[in-house]
Image (cartoon, rainbow, N blue to C red; front, top):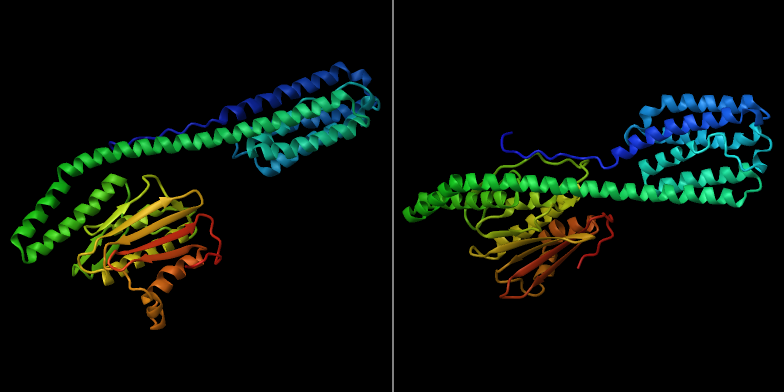
Length: 407
């Protein structure tokens, strides 16, 4: 689409995979060269050269497997490590005195390539697992390990863990950079749209609202609806949020308000931006404040929290009076998401909520508190007569089932 920014993604770890591919080829040649030079030292040369032939064929056939993280699967990593460990343990079989000499194992430094594949694929924890198995195999192969053995084992162990940690940091940095580029591109596109919309649609809506209010009658209702759409459109332009489909009747205004919407996310979706579900509530009497960055939550939890917020706003429209103003504040905390709905209505008399539950009017108990209880969250209602009502909804980012408390 014309005017859209294209975000270019760069792979920080791809050069490491190419380096690993070259390393495996070079170390295979190195291991074969050592074996040819010292061929007279093998008591069982058939064992030595038989394994090295298998290792060389395996290396060549599996080069595509170490081309990138997607191709390097867990079964391949396991089989590759088995080849390395087999070569280490076959060394004393091919050369009976190998465990008493300072010589290297049959695969030599090719073994480090198998460990590095673990590091690149799964980070430092995978590297620690693979290097530990290699260390145990080397100690068993030596029988009476020397200081050099422990030195080499420790070197591979530390180096592989360090590389695995660097890979994890690189991946996190890559994700952060990609997100920053996406935000920058979206901001530029939003600014362009804001200029175009401000020069056309918003001005027309504002003019319709003013003229409708001046004319009165049915024109006043048209003007009010134009004002609603102007506010919703300004919210969309300023925050980049796409309102959801909603057709509702505002009891205090006596008219139908219709906004457009995207496709409803499924429960299987990994996450959804909560702001996209709450933005449609913004209007002439409802202000919406959000952190300016995506508030990602599991889809089901986000919808439940949005429904609880809608229930709180329904209570404002039903009980706070025609002229009441409401405010929605979204806070993205490290371990939880907090949505606060506040109004400037007359407040709730003390004991009124308990009385409503006793009468079977369970709007707060079920629509708000019940939803959050199922998510492991909390709902707190703070109201002072004459000073409005505040409903604070808290939901953990990691669902805890029905472990949440209700106050």
